[in-house]
Amino acid sequence: MIRDILKQIEEVDAAIGAQQEPLTDEDAALRSALLLKRSNLLNECRELSAEDKVFLARHPRRPKIDEYIHALFTDFFEQKGDRQCKEDPSILGGIALYKGLPVTVIGHRKGSDLASNMTYNFGMPGPEGYRKALRLMRQAEKFGRPVITFIDTPGAYPGMEAEARGQGEAIARNLAEMSQLTVPVIAVVTGEGSSGGALALGVANKVLMLENAVYSVLSPEGFASILWKDASRHGEACEIMKLTAQDLFEFHVADEIVPEPLGGAQLDHGALFACLDVALTKNLAFLRKFSGNTLAAQRYKKYRQIGQ
Amino acid sequence: MIRLIKPILDTPKQKAFEWKARREANGTAQPWQEAQFFTCPKCQRRATRANWSEHLYVCPNCGHYQPIGGYYRLSMILDHGSFKELNEKTTGRDFLHFPGYPEKLSLQRRKTGLSEAVVTATGKIHGIQVVAAVLDSRFFMGSMGTGVGEKVTLAVEYAAAKKLPLIIFSASGGARMQEGIYSLMQMAKTSAAIASFSAKGGLYISYLTHPTTGGVTASFASLGDITLAEPHALIGFAGPRVIEQTIGQKLPAGFQRSEYLEEHGFVDKIVPRSEMRETLAQILKLHTNGGKRL
Image 1 (cartoon, rainbow over the protein chains, first blue to last red):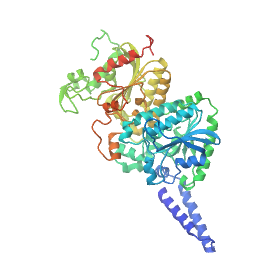
Image 2 (image 1 turned 90 degrees about the horizontal axis):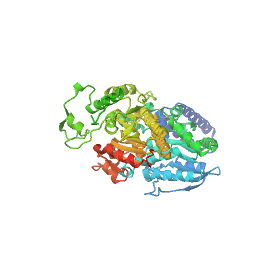
Image 3 (image 1 turned 90 degrees about the vertical axis):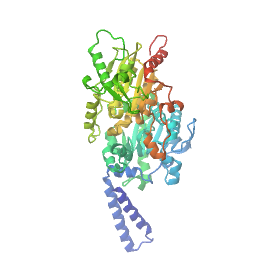
Image 4 (image 1 turned 45 degrees about the horizontal axis):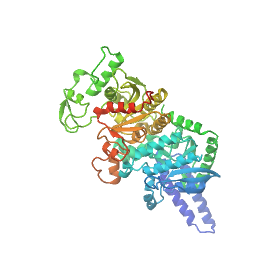
């Protein structure tokens, strides 16, 4: 299990950190032993099960939307509110420059601790969040900006207010309108993409998935409780749901897999951002060659042929 | 049994359609197996089949709306002899090689006589040619997998190509779990088809029936130019049980019902089953452009 390996790596890192400089010969020997142990542990992470990937995809230290924006874009200007009802902080969106090019960036926002997670509702948007996203996408179309979305959500929020204000309608509207956008749309599944709540930001020309990201019709827990009336069987669900980036690439749902550092993105944010930067640059340059109508037609075709 | 005036001779196709509709209304394949009485699952009172049928399977005692099959519903709304099924043979596939799914599918097929959870057809309402799709909640809870997604999309594309109005009767428990991500992607596929149809000026009437939830609510069912609902149907994205678990309290009576949605601005009109055909005819009439049909 990746959980145990990561724990051991943390212990090794703590032991290395505890060593006092300058190193004596004895310490140096210990350190090289520790480093060897660390690289051996990392090597064990080469073969991960689907359940391991779900664990990594939800890792609390995995990069969040604001870190992606900070690392990959400049001059970010946040846009708030759906102009109808309220501001939903579980989706973050705005305009930024990507290597000098104005783009619209939108993504699910998760927190890094309990307090911030409460504020961002654990990345579970209500209809206002999706309507804000749609507002930003329409504006991107108006000004000819490409749209880049970051997907990381356990799903749309199942609450009373969300239902009263039309959660289903908000998601449906996003799916319909995103399919018609005449600007390039790139979606990056960075963590867990569950249910319609993820797809509502995901109707794109290119869908990139980070190596350890997962994308599925429902969370493994929800899946197990619907199918077997037993949420504790989520490990089993992970395996049969076929939700890893590798599965989805095979199904032609994901177009590209962005490599992560060994052991998961949480171990080295910088390495991940570098890989993602390369992938974004390449795909954006490719998509910008096409006219708006071609882009919309390409997007239609991409989804039209899934399950045909 | 629905249309009163019948031509002297029906085509074999029409006979087959009526047989299917009749079978659905009675719940059994053979006329001699038909039970005389049918017990309302809500009020537990019995009434004769003839009485139920006369009331279009709305309980004659308490007004409970019994879910009905696709062919039966189409027989209620289409002009006699105009029914023509579309893509009858299209079905879902077991893309994920999900354990036990093929067996479950064939069980559902035997049980209902349907090949998928949706029937798509073209026919006439008061002489106006339309494309209609009816989801059937008796087949796998009306869940949307690749079969439903594909058939609905084909129907929308057919309506777009022939410039016909589109009517979809939704009834669904949501995504078909056994088809995983393929099932989720049908939401994008059907929504994109509706968006493209709409951009070409097509009229889409969405008719919500009990229950419409999950991925179907969050895709084509919510995208109608006109949205109608059957009385007291459960309509929502998240199921009531999931919401109760999340918020840790009981939901108020009437929550997520048609009347609630109408009050919150998501439904144009609640239409009883008995007025279904006439209401559709009225809307279609209102969209004829100086005699030129859509």
